[in-house]
Amino acid sequence: MQTSMQTLGVDLGERSYPIHIGPGLLDQAGLALPHLRQRRVVIVTNTTVGPLYLERLSQALRSAGVQVDSVVLPDGEAYKNWQTLNTIFDALLGQRAERRTTLIALGGGVIGDLTGFAAACYQRGMPFMQAPTTLLAQVDSSVGGKTGINHPLGKNMIGAFHQPSLVLADTDTLDSLPDRELSAGLAEVIKYGLIRDADFLAWLEANMDRLRARDTQALIHAIHRSCQHKAEVVAADEREAGQRALLNLGHTFGHAIEAGMGYGAWLHGEAVAAGTMLAADLSRRMGLLDQAQVERMAELFRRAGLPTVAPDLGEAAYMGAMGIDKKVEGGRMRFVLLKRLGEAFVSADYDPAALRATLAGAVARA
Image (cartoon, rainbow, N blue to C red; front, side, top):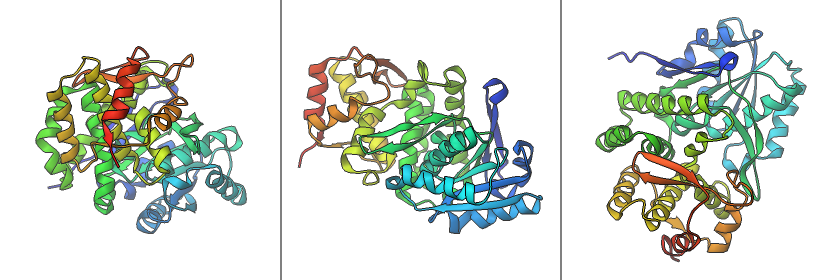
C-alpha cells in the first residue's frame, strides 16, 4: 500500500516553515526548491549517514539544477563541540559559500544541532534545512530551531535559536537505524504523551510493538503526532520563556547523566528515559503521582527498549551538573514534574529532601 506524505506547519509568522513526513522524500527535490534563496546548497552529514544517503539527496538536487557541495563530519555525540563546528566553517569558507547558500543537515540530532548553529553564525546568519535521519531527530530536535554544541561542563550550553526553512522527515531512513537508536527516539515520542496527551500515551501503549517492528503507518502516525505537539509549543513559546520548558521532561536529570557518563556512553534518548523516571520518582515523593502511575511509565519505557534506572553518579555529581541546567533561574533549579500522566508543569518549588531521596534511592547501585 502506498503511504502518502503528511505535512504540518510551524507557525512563526514570516519564519514559519513546513514539516513533511513520509517515505521517499529525499528523492523529492521539488519539496526543497521553493525554500532555497539561491540554487546552491551545502549538505552537512557524518561518516555513518553520508555513505547511505548523501549521494541520493545530492543527485536529486543536482537533477533539479542545484549546485551541491558537502562536508562529512565524524559521527557521535563526542564530536558535538567547537572543533567540529570549526570544520564546518572551514568547509564553507573553502567552498566560498555565500550568505544565501542553504545548509542542509542530513543526519541525526548531533548533525542537526551543529549545522543549525553553523548556519546561525556563518556570515551572521544563513538559511538551513533539516533532513533528519533518526527517529529522535524527526520527532524532536529537527523542529523548533534549537541549535548548539556541548561543553565539557554541560550539554547544549552554547548555541542559538535559529529556525530551519524546511524539515524533510523521510521515514525510509529509519530502515537503516540500529534498534538502539530507534528506542532512543521512542523516549522523546513517549515524552509528548506524558506531558500533554494522555490519549496518545494510551495509543503508544497499544502500538509499541508495531513501532519497534518499524511498521510504517505506525511510525508516521507517531512522528506526525509528536511534531504536532512540538510545533504547537514552539509557536506559542519559541525561545522557551514559558511552556516550551515542558518539552524538557527528564532532560535536567538526563543531561546530567550524559555529562557524568561521558558524552556518547548513553544515547540522549536513553538518558532522557532514565531521567524521566527520576522526575517521576520525585513527583511521587512530592505526592503528585502514585506508585501505579510510576510503574505504568516504567513498563512503557521497558517495552520501548529503554533503561528505567539511572546510573548512580553520586548526589554531588548530579547536583553539580543540574546546577548549570538552562532552566536554572535566579540560582534555583527548576524541574519538569508530572501532576498526572498527560499533564506536566515546571516548578522551582520542589522538596529538597525529596530530591535527595530520589538521587539516593532511585538510581542503580554498583
